[in-house]
Length: 216
Image (cartoon, rainbow, N blue to C red; front, side, top):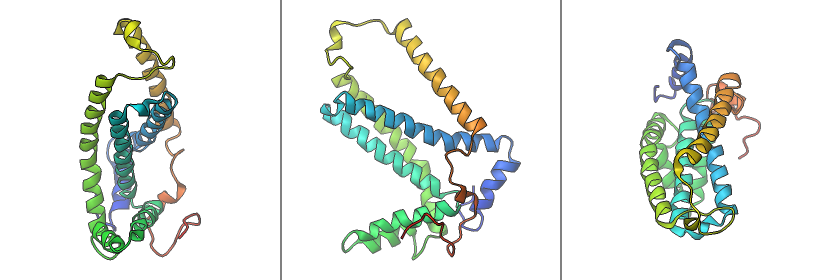
């Protein structure tokens, strides 16, 4: 990948066409992010339904994880340098200009100049690489607090009084869930790899042409 506004789009095409299984790795990476969010929102929905927000530290770390994941996905979405990459970056980063007094300075600092440029791509690429390690650290914290407080269940009872062994019951249950997930993931990546993509992102970024559904 090239962190250059003139080469980034072509470098993605080169990865897809000329590198062995490059198209497959990119499909896994892009659609894997979408599946990650689907699983995360299912997990959050379960937590809301079971009142898991009562475990305050576990919940707060979970919310932090969601925000960090969103940031990772956003900077990653900018990197291919298609139309939606460029205009998404333009719209989202310009939202920060609404911050009183400091807004415009923050936007210029993030861009590394007075417009989105090579410096922006370099920064976003670095952030996209570093943030997953920070997310991993927060996942360990999330699990640590979960083990300290325990988790809720649909019956709302203390599960300490009625336990079953992890093996084989929960192993079988988890394997069924894993098989279902892998089936959906492989169907998405191999049969419908562009289902969740925006067609405008197959067009190289052009600051003079705004996609129809991008609003000021």
